[in-house]
Image 1: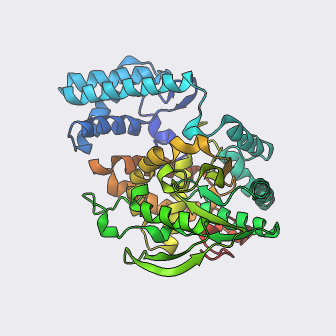
Image 2: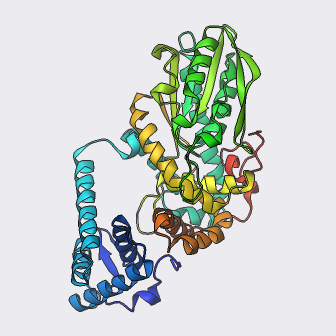
Amino acid sequence: MNSEYLFSEKEITKFKIGRVIKRDGRVVAFNKNKITDSIFRAAVEVGGADRALAESLAGKVVKKINEAYKKDSLPSVEEIQDIIERVLVENGHYKTAKAYILYRAEHQRMREEKTARIVVEDNIPYKTLWKVFNWNAEHGCETVEKLNAHIRNGTYGKLVSEAEAYYHNEIKSVAEKIAGQAGRVRLVIISGPSSSGKTTTTIKIGERLKEKGLSLAVLNLDNYFKDIDEHPKDKYGDHDFETPQALDLPLINEHLFRLLNGEKVAMPEYDFMTGRRKLGIKEMRLKQDQLLLIDSLHGLYPEMTSSVPHEMKFRFYIEALCQIKDKSGEFMRWADLRMMRRMVRDSLHRGYRPEQTVGHWHYVRRSEMKNIVPFINKVDYVFNGALPYELPAYKSHLCGSIRDIVRKFEKDPGKLDACMRAKRVGALLDEVLELEDTGVIPKNSLLREFIGGSSYKY
């Protein structure tokens, strides 16, 4: 890969070492930028804001590495981190060195905890992840390079068809599970993190349930957002509207209780352009044999549906369980895939610039880890909302934007996390071949929720 985010093979030759050994034994390309980022992150923790100084110190680290190792040696990540600590201390940056040491210790503790427990990433059952990875491996798309081969060999369309058939078969399975409990269940909750595919999946489950003779009514919780000026701004003027508290929880619970008891309610209506809502706009009443269906980012949050008895709920969770490895053997992060989806969707359909999406993402992840992930083990069904063929569809939309984001954020200490996310996504997209014709993607595909051209109205 020849990327502006990593050193090219030609540039690597400036250093005596070209590769390093990771903790899991894999050998990966040496990347000076990661040294700079780690020093800058530690400096920010103690009030620093000088990216140029971090780059200068990283240069001194490289010099020490060149002095310590012969050409083509393979030092470990731990050995390089030891050198970073020594350089920080030798150059008088004691507070930064302490922050760096604490950072290393915390990550060591997290790794030990992860090894000691069976729980896998974000509380998703291992069996579910294995099922996804096994499907990808059987269809030759478990790595970026194999996905690229489908484009080169003209088999990409076949992969799309097979992946869509698998996705729709899963929709059928969950609809059958809900239908089998229709006498008891009255509220179907479809929950999942941002851009996991909730909206399209909700529509499709609704279609399947209607085929089984079940009547549905959808309660759009987006209309229950509080007025935007009720939420504090950060120093960049960004509102944190990713928390459950951004919604009028008491009014939601009141309406759920009344609807499930056959009463009529007057729902609010929220205008995303103005950030304001109007109360009592649209009347709604459930029929006696009707299921109430909601899709919500925070549907699993206990206080969201506390007025509804447990036995009346069916809780469905969707996550983009992408099981695709990059060139270095790392699995793509699910949150990165969802961030790319949101960057494309918001720029095309919501007038929200990609840099705003990336800059806001720390709110998204913070809320997910606090208000969604802890409750996943309570759900009735875990669903994969990732499509193994989708990465090539994003490349043309995002590559230029990501480069601009990196240039804009890399010297701003307050945007360090956003910059690192952009770099990581940029490096991944550099490996991916661009999809020149999206016509092969069905109009009813979940992917159309993000890239446009869907047969559904969102």
